[in-house]
Length: 354
Image (cartoon, rainbow, N blue to C red; front, side):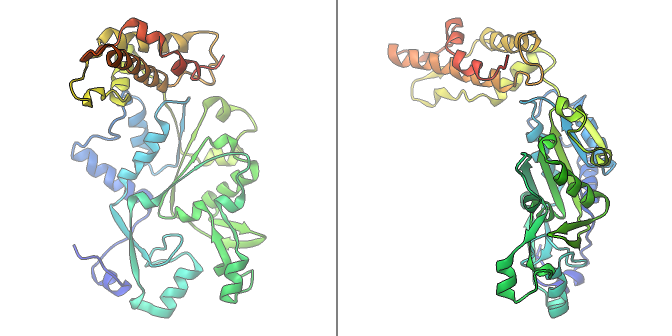
């Protein structure tokens, strides 16, 4: 298919734009009807987490994933990009992915006024429409929303109150895409208010100047359940605007945990000539059982949890110890033993908090 290069060509092609939530909903419906696997590589969530995410997308809700570390929250969030179109058109040079038919920024409107149907069009892929940020107490309004750029003002001869002088933050740059905020409760209250204003009113204040920005964004958050439910961590109006709270979890049984570890752990040691790796089932099950026992142990901090990376790292270390032994003794078979599990202690201790 030939991509339109100007607004006139795009209009003549009959291309229709829609909101990002409608776009994700339509692509999700197509995938479900086609029997496609959703969230590839995510094991153990088919009957719990995935149906809730599907419901949230179908309902066009912003959502938050609540769970402890090592529960695939970030991987799930990043795979939401699979529900976006391959490419969408934007006004060339736009910082906030301006819709050619309805530009938001002063730059986009200016381009349409100056060039009309000759306005240049760029195409952005789905990965470029995903913006992710880890919330920390030092995150500022400038990082998330934007700030006045005096250099832009000086170069363009604009007043500081001119919208063209704004350097947009991460959230406006996610316009017509997905904005993900990890560890939401760590975000300062005034930033949460800024997020709420964008979600509710579609306007922001940058250095005291009110700016209308009715952004088209799918908002996805993640948080530790203990922090999320603690009073004062998240302002109530923001929490009220999150349509779906979805709880993730650790594997329900040892068999599932072993399957996840087998999928994620790097065990391709037989790439060395004449080497062959064989991991006995009881080794994998023993390591996984240690993780399960740690999660149930009263001495382990429940707010921290025991990540699935515990089993993955321990398996890799046990295999490495068996590999080291095979190299020293000039054996062709790498077969981990129970004694090799003890060598994985350095990989275990850092993943448990008392």
